[in-house]
Length: 100
Image (cartoon, rainbow, N blue to C red; front, top):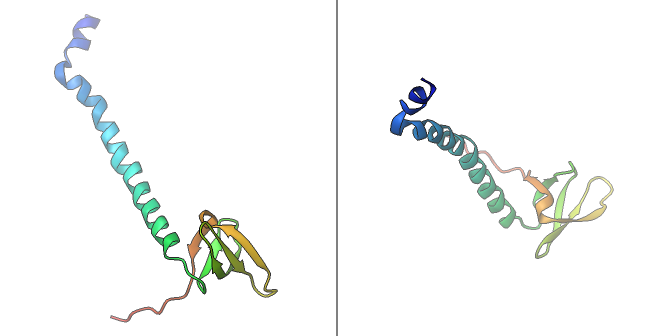
């Protein structure tokens, strides 16, 4: 009887396993790819004068942009620190808000 129950799924048996995999792809992988793409665009658009926050929580203003690193000046002491670009969590430069 156990063989009969297992065989009764027929061709739909493999479909039962495929549905959660497809759902996992659309619920987890696709949003992460979009987030990574937006982060890469943010890093490529960084320029001197932008205010940034690092992954460590250090806030400062970019003084100089190099190939794979940048120099940030912190407030209020004006200490300059060098970070790799991948350490930047967010650009916090205040941009004017458009009124609709």
